[in-house]
Image 1 (spheres, rainbow, N blue to C red):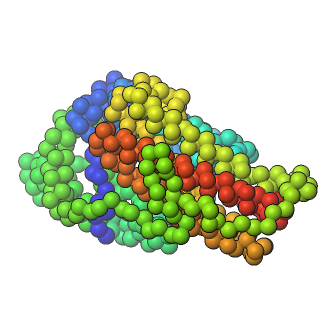
Image 2 (cartoon, rainbow, N blue to C red):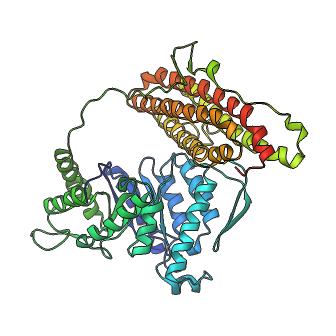
Length: 501
């Protein structure tokens, strides 16, 4: 186990007691005023004395402006994942990108069935959660209607959208091996609670997550560690975990960060004095201690991607280009109109996929110009909240571009690992074209890296907007050229060979 270097977040875990609804609003505002980073709300829809968690999160999002919010964790058997995906994306848009999503398989089956929910075995619950993750991520990814035929959940042509303002983290509440392995394979975060997973148990659980992540081709650091904690501030040390004065709390939480990679600590307490002590005395001490122990970052030059043969090293306003179009190999052309309509339609699926990428690129360029003009409305920034401040506009553009980069990278990976091998296997003469397309994917990946660097620099210094504009120009020039070349060379073979892409 080790520290993964994640940014530290500290928060409050609030009980959605209907009788304390006014207190909940007051404590949410207090948590933000105290500088805490996140609010967690437990979700037990079968509990008649509790407010509905999603309704409460919406109200608290409206009462605050900075603090993040998440269901800690959502009761999936009573929340259809397709509806949940739209709800989470909607609230993320309305709150300016402040929503994360804790997911649970349903810890109290009696309460679930009492509300008309399904009764599942432990194995079925894990299987259903995995299907739900696929449903939600599919509906957050631009594209055609989604069709999924799972054992527990299915989609029959559901259109994706709305798309969240930032990549929503799927944080999984898990304790047993199968759920921990699912967390390592698919989760963006892990959410245990100290009442069910004591600090002494974290190492063993984390090892299962880490191993599952590595088997899935991921890094253990891809899974953020979120710990729900409870304790008591007292004058005497040595009382156990989080039982003592603030310095004892700070020492114990620092150890959990440095030894076990925990980076989000959410305190369960309805006592406002304890919340203030946590925020004002424990949090700064943990931040300082972790900063001292973490290795100092070594200044490095901005990454310059290696240039395969497809690169022309030309870049500048008015003269932008990274792909050498003149040296592209070409295949023998056949008339696609000679094929039956059904086969022609199969080839056109590639164009439809590319059209989504072109549309997204146009939206990025529109958003960039609105930021340059000091404006930002919901329509141009993927239906985000109206009348953002300039600082929020820059942040929004950054997350918007980051989401697009991830989508584009996924698209290219699917082509490299699935579509291209099928093509060359069915028609070996296409090998030079496919090899060149793969090289161009690497070039575009380098441009995406440059865009990410430029976005980071712009967020730190808004005067560096021109650096983002240059990288977007490079991306547009390379991507549009690449997509056109790919369609010219591959649409007819895909149609004629009737390959499933």
